[in-house]
Image (cartoon, rainbow, N blue to C red):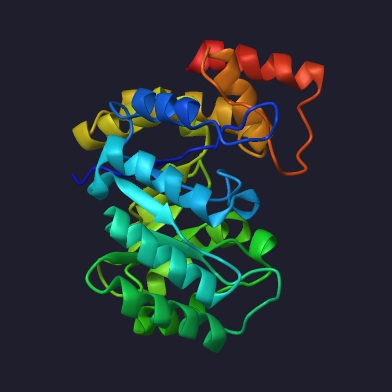
Length: 286
């Protein structure tokens, strides 16, 4: 059986002054390298809209140094094709061979506009992998399953779906060519994703507590249903508490003695009672 791919959507730690905390980021990478299959860098969980382009590239470079090019998905998406193309060229120069780009965002793009965006990026990526990233609630741009063919024709090699799009896994895969790669950003939905023929998950919570996802992957590969179900129960406990909030993920890292750090975006810190639930869930399920 093919093992599901667990990619941790790693948060970006900032100092109290709001500066990039690169040593903390490297420490968090080092801690994940033996557990998960790779990292998704400078994505939504990484607060990419609040990062300068140079900072995104510093993070990508650091991840490549720890995980290597086959285990890093560098997120280069931007509101404009020009900015995304510049980030993609620079990421390739750093050695990235797997890149993802969220759909154009803020101003909603048509299917034709999204396809043009990915076609131009794929022309730059060449033989390197380029994945679309669909998150309608964040981007304001959606790609419905019946429109996936336009993106496939544009040359994308796979898709990561989050939010509303993650509820359409079966529909996307039903319209995709054989072997098309799909990862869900719904951390707790691995059973359904794999049953539909998906590749795996891009999980923010696994960046804090990687062991349940690693255990699920290993149990799935070994055909150990009991171990798989036990891992899924641990995942189902963690995700509702940590999953919706970058601030919660950072609180979890701090609780583990790592550095979550501050947030740059306007994200509320978990209330005291919720923070205690998060700490307790991490202690029980991590």
